[in-house]
Image (cartoon, rainbow, N blue to C red):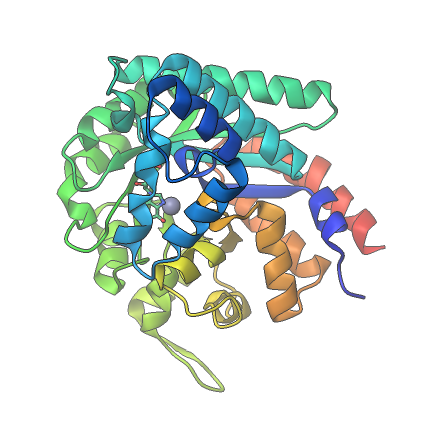
Length: 357
Ligand SMILES: O=c1[nH]cnc2c1ncn2[C@@H]1O[C@H](CO)[C@@H](O)[C@H]1O
Ligand SMILES: [Zn+2]
C-alpha cells in the first residue's frame, strides 16, 4: 500500500541538515524587508516563494547561494533573528519533525551592529520560543543549533570558540558552508583541531559541488563526525551487479560516518540529475549511514515530509525505510547518547510500529 502524504507528516522525523537562513517563510521576508527598505525581486509572498525556487534551480552551487543575499539581509536584528528562529521551530514541528539540528552563520548577521554572541543568543531565544509554543500545541520538537563558519572567509576559529562558549545553551555542533570548489576544509584546520581538543562535534559540507578530495580532507585531515551532503562518495564506488567500494567509500561505510543527504537541493545545484537518479538509492542499498534532509526549505520549496514523499515516489520506499532513515539521523545527532536513545525508543519506534500495523 502506497504511503499517503498526510501519514508522512504524522510520522516523527529527524532532520540534521537545515539552514536557518534557507528556511524563512516568504511572507516573513516581505515584512522584514519592508522594515529595513531591502528591495526584493517581488513583494508578493507567493511570487517571492516561486522566485527563490526558480533562482536556486541554477545547476550551480555558486548561483544557488546568491539567493541567500535576500534572506541574510533581513536577518540583521535581534528581533528579526528571534522571529525567524521561532517560526522555523514551529514550521518544523507542524511538519512532524521531532528532532532538528538547524544551522546558520553568525558572521553573516553583523551588518547592523550585533555582536556574534548577541546573534547566537537571539536565535537560541527564538528556538526556545518556537519549541515552547509548539509544545503547548501538543507538537513536541527538540532543536539543536549548529554554528556555521563561511569557508571563503577567515573567521572559523572565532566561530568555533563561539560554538563552544554556547555549548550548554543549545549549540550542539559546528559546520563550514559556502562555495566548495577552491575552499578546501583544510583551510580551517586550526578550528577543527581546537574543536577536537574541546570534545565538541562538527560536520563539514563536503562532496556536494566538489568530489572525493573534499570528502577525504573533511574526514582524514579535519576529523568530521558527519558529512554535509557527502553525496559524491559515489565517485569512489564502481557500480554493477556487485558494486565495488574504493578505500575512501569503504572507510566511510565501515566507520558508519553519517551522510546528510539533501535530495532536492542536490538536483537544484546539479549534484544529482533527478530524484530518481539520486545516489541515495545506491547508498541506501549499500547500507551507508544515510539520512534525509531538507538543506534549504525556502530555496527548494520543500519540507522534511516532502523530501520523504519524493523518495517514496521515486524508490518505492515504505515505512521500514522511512523509519531506518529517521533512526539513522537520530543515532547521528550531536546531542548526548541517552537523549538520542530516548527519542528513538519512546517517540520514533512506537510511532512507526503504529503506522506499519
Ligand atoms: O548546500 C549548501 N552548500 C553550501 N553552503 C550552503 C548550502 N546551503 C546553504 N549554504 C550556505 O550556508 C550559509 C549559512 O546557513 C548560507 O548563508 C549559505 O551561504
Ligand atoms: Zn547545506
